[in-house]
Amino acid sequence: MAGEEKGKTKPRFSFLYFVLIALIVYLAASLLIKPKVEEVDYSDFLGYVKEGKVEDLKIGKETITGKLTKKVDGKAEKIDFKTTKVDDPGLVPLLNENGVSYAGKLENTILLQLLLWLPLFVILGLFWYFMMKRMGRGPDFMSVGRSKAKIYAEDQVKVNFTDVAGVDEAEEELTEVIEFLKNPEKFQRLGGKIPKGILLVGSPGTGKTLLARAVAGEAGVPFFSISGSEFVEMFVGVGAARVRDLFSQAQDRAPCIIFVDELDALGKARGMNPTGGHDEREQTLNQLLVEMDGFDPRKGLILMSATNRPEILDPALLRPGRFDRHVLVDKPDKKGRLEILKIHSKDIVLAKNVDLTKIAAKTPGFVGADLANIANEAALLAARAGKDAVEDEDFDEAIERAVAGLEKKNRLMNQQEKERVAYHEVGHALVASSLPGTDPVEKISIVPRGLAALGYTLQLPTEDRYLMTETELNNRLATLLGGRVAEEIIFKEPSTGAQNDLMKATDIARSMVTEYGMSEKIGLVTFERERGPSFLGLGGLEGPKEHSDDTSREIDNEIRRVIDAAYDTAKKILTKEDRRLRRMAKRLLEVEVLEDEELRELLGRRKAKTAKGD
View 1 (cartoon, one colour):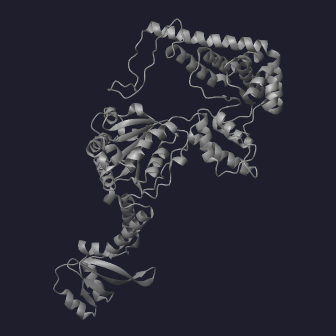
View 2 (cartoon, rainbow, N blue to C red; view 1 turned 90 degrees about the horizontal axis):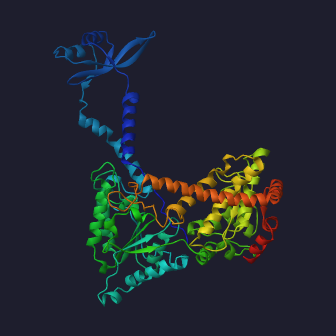
View 3 (cartoon, one colour; view 1 turned 120 degrees about the vertical axis):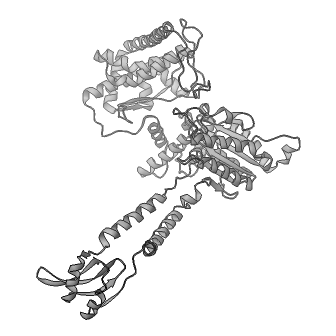
């Protein structure tokens, strides 16, 4: 199914910017623009008047300002001056006697200062307003309590179920919602009530957001879309106000759908705040609970939400009467992946050799977003190579990029490291090809990829698997340890290259012992507990250990026994296949990549038949 759509986050222009700009301009005007004025004593001022050196006097209540002729560097220049006014009745006659022009001066009051600065503030205010309008937002102080939901009218929701694939069960569950929005009388006639809230649960990228929009598109009703994180702000009460405003707008436009994406950002279980107290997020959640209880579903208002972490949601959200129905949006199976690939490749020019069915078979565990990325990456690779159409090899390269990362052609290894990596990868492949129930080896490479992979062995399953037997898990452990064993056989000592393999092997072995009951000594007991929020008995934060130290010691011993048994299996296989190990590693060093017919031939006839049978 197509990946979930995300709205673009618009840039914010805070009112704080406006205040900072005004302050900078004011300081610049005060310090830089203000002319230099020389202060003189009143007695000196009277002397300058008698000498005829002053003119253009402005007499105020407290100061006298004007122009003073003074010699600077031997030249006569006129400078501004001021002096403190004293109660001198002889000043005016003295000025008249010496022919000095003078006038009264209006004092520079605070009101006058504000009037002088008013044009500047008006200009800055208009600048800020138009910047906010350009970004598509109103001023923050005017809309702080308004909902930030994006509203799509009936004719603006272009998505419907033809754009959705791979989640047939979820579509069927939501068809009832569409019927209710289109024809509510059908359900109300018998007294039935449509669920108030529908929670879409699934892994990231499975298409929960797109599915919600498709429901609105099929029903032909307005669609309110908002993320859970957009409710919560640093100001107390803002989130609750936005919840109220959202439901108020939605009820005015009912029938409609409210979609809250990433509900876990808002609906996390209360009491998880480590500092205690009743924080803003909890107030917002409380308001959401109140609104869900308050609205009348008969108006055609339905709340849909999506999360990939349902275990941390507050139990009050999940009770009947709020989010009544939980719809699982699971990873698609092979058929679903094929339908998704068809949707994402309909605008791509495909070569005749491209078989989307095979590509779907090669991508178990991929979600809609992954498949969309693969189709797009394949088109880009073909365009980069100057091809007229996207070929099968472009899809293969796109899958490898998704699984193993980008090729690091500039990461050069010395010959000794290259040999060790070659034997390591061939060790994986030989063990995998010698054990039943393992995924077929499609490719071996010693070209570095991703962040740390110096080489890789690509195994692609031929079908979707939902269960694994104990034998299959043991075979997978042996395959993981095959690289380490090959290094020990050839070079007589291991290297750090098996670090990731050992981590994966330890995780599998621990799960076999503590979760799956695959240890005779430990028995049919599980020691793992689901993790969830604290204080609610749902798991989340690790609680106290529920078994003794002796049991812990036994668990550790059993994990070691399982891994040692897998190690012995891998060592027996590679010791027996020593000649083939050396021959394949030598060939891999020559070509760097082994695949297709050559790889099947080197691995032996049994694997070749299996590959052909696929």
